[in-house]
Each structure stands twice: as C-alpha cells, then as structure tokens.
Amino acid sequence: MERIELVKKWLDENVLVFKKVTLLELHAITFSLDVYQGSLVAYINDERVNFTFGANDCDGKIKVNGPIFVSPLGAPASYSAINLPNEYTKLIEKNLRECFPNLRPYGKNRETGIETDGLTPISQRIIDRDKVMKSIEAISKNDFFIKLI
Image 1 (cartoon, helix red, strand yellow):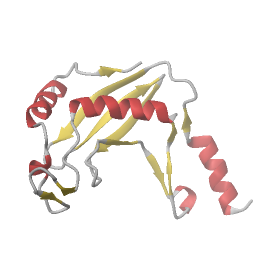
Image 2 (cartoon, rainbow, N blue to C red; image 1 turned 90 degrees about the vertical axis):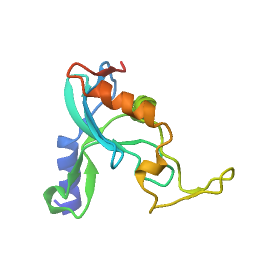
Image 3 (spheres, helix red, strand yellow; image 1 turned 135 degrees about the horizontal axis):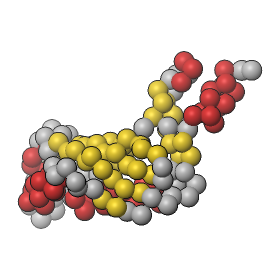
C-alpha cells in the first residue's frame, strides 16, 4: 500500500466524524486578553473535543480552530482531527463573538484617519472592552457553560 493510501486509511480510522449533532455545549472556556485568544472544551454528542479560538487575522474576527493531527504516519502535513459540519463551527463562532467582540480590523479608519496594522497593540484594537471584561468574569465561574444544542 502506498504511503498516501496508508495515511488516508489512518485518517478514516481516527478522525471523529459528526454527521448529526444532538448535543453541543461549550465548557472550560479560557481567554487571554493580551493575545485575544482562548480555548474551550466542546461536548459534541458523547465526545469531548478541545478547540482554540481567537482573532488572529487582519479582519479581527473571532475564529475557531478544532484539533489537528500533525504529520500522521510521518506525512508532511496536518489534518483535521474532527469532521464537524460547517454550520456547527459557525454556531460556535457566532456565540463566541457575542462574548468576545471582533477586534478593530487592519486598515485606515475613514472617520478618524487612524491606521491599524500588525504592529498595533491588541489593547488598541479592542472595540468593546467592557463587554470583554464581563465575559472574562462570567467564564471564570466554575459552572459557566454555553448550551448551543
């Protein structure tokens, strides 16, 4: 069997596939204001799945990243460790954006003339600091979780 076929077979056997989601809850949410990134544990059906999230791109939008397999069987690539329909990833992102609003995107603000770029500190890109601080306070409580389905 060729190496590519071996990797495909390994992925078929190891990737968690969610065709229908009957339970989706977000637990153990952490967030670092300094880097505007966090992590969470999602309970999807009967599985526990770790995610990271943050606003790392120039658009300033919170995006979710699922777990990955790095170089399985020595393959020079990374692969998603889960197969979750896009609608559920979007649902997670939507709810996280309600807690942690998007950052000011890169570019020149037409009203103020202020430019935002990769050298602009995160603290200057936060649009609604009060909302973020309230969310950080809420997630710090041990019993906090978000039930989506």
